[in-house]
Amino acid sequence: MRLRSTAGAPPQLTPGSATTLRPRARDSHNFARLAVEHGFLAEADVHHVEGHARSQGLALHDAAVDLGLLNPEDAGILAALQGGFSLLPQGDQRVDPLVVAAFDPANAYAAKVRTIRAKMRAAAKDGDPASLRLAVLAIEAGDEAAIMAANLAVVLAQMDGQTMLIDVDMGRPSLDRLFRVANKAGLAEQLMGSAALLPAAKTAVEGLWLMTAGRASGSATSLVTRGPLAETANGWGLRDISMLFYLAERKGDQTPYGSILAGFDAVVIVARRGDTAIADMRRVIDDLDRHGVPIAGTVIA
Image (cartoon, rainbow, N blue to C red; front, top):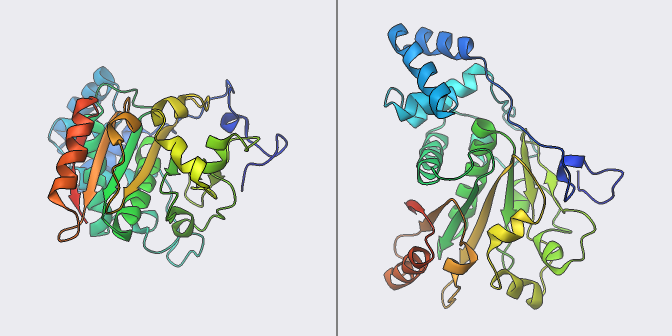
């Protein structure tokens, strides 16, 4: 569903709305039962995890990871078993099969993406856990980076609640194809002020929205470099929804990512062995460091 008119727009996705999106609550007793039954936790650990979750304001699976009692992979599988999020049936044509996290939480690639999520949330410890501003920054990393961003967005929606994925790669948009959403209006139209409402589309994945790149002109692309994306996102008026921005740099670009991503809670950099130049990596990392942007790590695609 593309948001086009006030009649069809959910109020929580209308700029300035006071309505909030909140993650669904999870049943602590169900989590504890599953963790013990499947051998992930000893019964003696359950109260410790629940107490830590309450004191730190964490979800139960995150509290268990924080205490070192579960690794992120096992925590993600338990969350799936717990019923805290739904999965798509294999073969569902509404999402590309490369987005494996939407179909199979036990898949090895989905487990790796959950590890990336855990590292990003650890790096974002000072941010509001219900409305984080996160980014995947690809440096000459090819299609693998977009696939990783798509899977990471699914994992965030599954484990943390309402999430919006934003495709900032206006030159070569790809997230619309992965989620099979028409790229008719998106970030470009939003930045140019030609979108009457926030151009976000609900994907087939529960709790996940996508803002496609849109049909960018040169002026729309230049608007990305003029100010922090975090301020742009804050102007959308959404509450209690985390956002994941996907950005991609190609050979020869000199994009000022430090100023673009200033104010973000965490960024993960994606590189490709043999293609990403070390000098470009150093330039980007130094620029992010100068602007105080927390880097959660580097992924080799």
